[in-house]
Image (cartoon, rainbow, N blue to C red; front, top):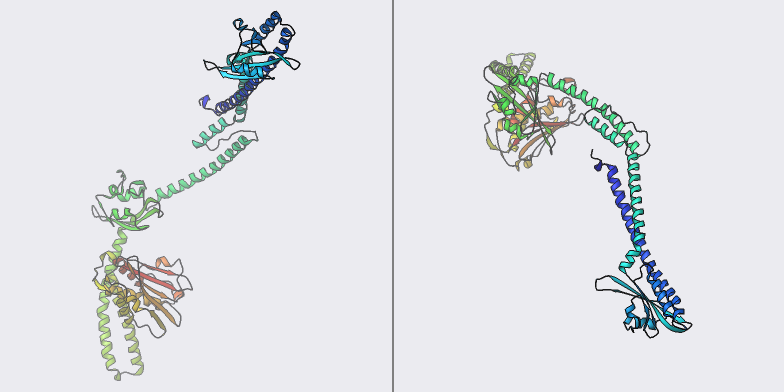
Length: 585
C-alpha cells in the first residue's frame, strides 16, 4: 500500500493544514497587534521627542542640541524622518537639512499647529505604499513654542516587524512539525490493528474462515476486531452448513433417476443432471439451450416456445421421439421466481413410454369392455321388459325379484354408458368437440332435468342470471355430462338426510365458470389433489359413497381442458365442498 494513501498520512495532512490555518490566523492577529502597538509606540515617541526638544528651543534656541535630538530620533526603528518647527511652521531642525528655514504650509502641518494633541495622518505615496505622519505639540505650560514632526512608512514597518515575523514563522514550523509527528504517532498507535484486520479480511474472502485477529486493546478498534473474529466463526459455521447442503443438493440432483434441467428465462441450460443427459441422449454431446438438447429428434408438446413464455407456474409437457424406437418423456416445467422476478425454469421429466402404452391399452380395454357389455345388457333389459309385461304369470316374490334385477341392470347400463363416454374423452387433446354457440344456462337446465335426485335433495339454481351471460362455442353434450357428474357427486357423497346443492354460472377473465356447491362433510386436504385422477375415490367410511368407477371428476377435468379451461375445487372438512370448471369464451 502506498504510504501517502494511508490513514496516518491523510490525518497528518489534515492536521498540518488545520495547524497551519490556526497559526496563520494567529500570526495575522499577532502581526496586526504588533503593527498597531508599533504605531502606538510611535505616538509615544513623538510625545517623548516633543518633550526632549522643548529645552532646545526654550527659553533660547539651541540648534546644536536640537539637531542632536533629531539625529537620535531618526535612528529609532521604523522612523523615516524627524523634524521640529516653531509655532508659525518654520522648520528649526529636520533630518532633511534642505528643509531647515522653510515655512511649511501643507494641510496636515496646519492642522497639527492648531491641535494640542498628537495627530496621525495616513496616505499613499506615488508608488502606492502607506505613509504615516505624526505631530506632537511642544509646550511650556499653556504656551505652545513649536511642533515635533515624526514620519514612517509601510516599508519601515515591515523592516521593524521582520524579526517578530521570523520568530512567528519558526514557532509555526516547530508547531507544525510536532503536530504532524504527534498525529502520525497517535494515528499509527490507534490504527496499528487495521493492517491485521485487512489481511484477515482478505483471508476470509479467500474462504479461510478460521483466521482470527489478535487485538488486546479495548477501544473501538479492539471492538471491531472482536466483532470480526465473531463474524468469521459464524461465517465458518454457516459456510460449513452451506457446503453440506450443497453436497446434499448435488447428490440429489445427480443421483435422482428423474431428468432435471435448470435453465435461465431464455432457455439457456445452466445445469443438467446425468439422468437428463441419458434420457436426451446427450452424454457426449453437450447442449447450450433446450432447443439444442431436444432437436431434431424430439417433438415437444406444448412447443418449447410456449413453455418458455412462462405463462403458468407449472406447465406439463411431453417430449416424444419416434426413431430408433419410441420414447416418450413426460414431466413439468416449473417457472422459478415470483410475479416480479423470473429466475428461469426447472424441468423435471422421466421416461413415460410404458405409462403411455399402458394408458393406451387401458383406454382400448375400457372401450372394448364397455362396448361388449352394452349388447348383452341391452338384450337383458329387453327380455326383462317382455317378462314384466306378462307378470300375471309370476308370483309376487318373482315380480319383486324381476323388478330388482331390472333396476340393477339399468344402473349397470348407466355405468357402462358413462364408461363409454369417458373412454372418448380421456385425453383432452384427442377430444373431437361438436361445437355450437350455446348458453350454459341451457346446458345446466338439461343436466338437472336428466337427473333423478329425489325429494331429499334441494337444488338452488338461478337460471335467469346464467341466461344473461354471453353464449360460448362449446360441445353441449359433454358439458351437460360434466355438470351432471358434479351434481351427482354432490348428492352421492353427502350422507345427510336433507341435501342442498347450489349451482351457478359466472363470468371471470374471459372464461365462463360453472360451480357446484354442496353442504356435505367436506374433503380432507390430503385427498384433494388426488380427486381428479382416474378411478380414484375416497374411502367409503368417510363419504358414505355408493359404488362407482371413480371416473366422474377425471371426465370433468378432460372436458374442461378440451374447452380451454380447467377444473378445481375448494373444500374444508365439515364445511362442504365446491367443485368448478371453466370454459373459454
